[in-house]
Length: 321
Ligand code: RIB
Ligand code: CA
Image 1 (tube, rainbow, N blue to C red):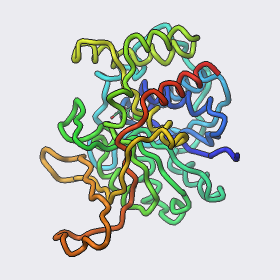
Image 2: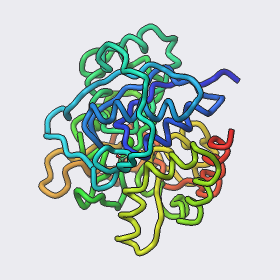
Image 3: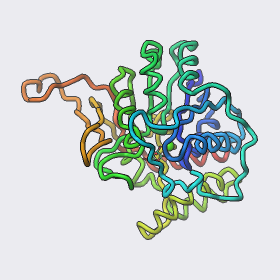
Image 4: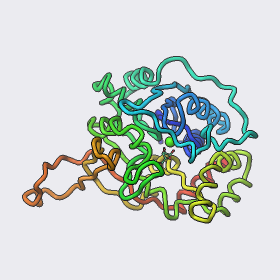
């Protein structure tokens, strides 16, 4: 089988780090480039964290291009209470990266790579969609060559610590997310609820991963701010990994348990609902007469559940390799 080629766009915080490691250790994937964006942490930190994760992965080193430092319209809101001040759990024992960022702005590099490719380079977006939307704004014609974008983003009923009805990546840059959804590029959205339930690692499972090898310890340690926060909030050590879940849904679609097709857009104006993802479920044409709002063809596949055991086994397999 040919390897699937991807650009990974990341606001590297601690769960992005695990997704980066998975992607670089998955033999069926070739990461063509990483592009960084502000979100979980400021751009400079995201870029350093991305370089650090590549070095820990210990396989190959695609170029890393830094992109947008601010959302398209609103001010940046980071999530240090979830990822730590440095985005990686503030662990002084973790090795700093020797690798350097590559020259050029991420948006320019995305456009060059897609333009020079054969229409087979996909995108995995695990941060706010600022870089991808900026590329679409600049050269929609080039971005039309992207066959598919997998996004960690969106939520059905779930909230995040910043707002009651939105998932962080979409909330952080709602205008960008809406531009991507409205671009005509097919999108798969791995929602927050797909990352919960039996997708969460228990304290015991985390100890098991930590004991595998240095890489396992890195994956657990860099997520310690969230693990500690969960212990305070829920009374038990546990960890959800949204970005690794999105990577798993991308390369192992057989792990997806439930999904639906929808015309998805983002609420941009609501006082309380800004950043909420609105899903118009695809219905058979015969129901057309029933609807009193304008209906549009589906622009996305929305993933709402993933096989937790299959996901965990897959992550452990990649860490052991
Ligand atoms: O909403 C989940 C958050 O954790 C997002 O920022 C996602 O990218 C992950 O880092
Ligand atoms: Ca992320």
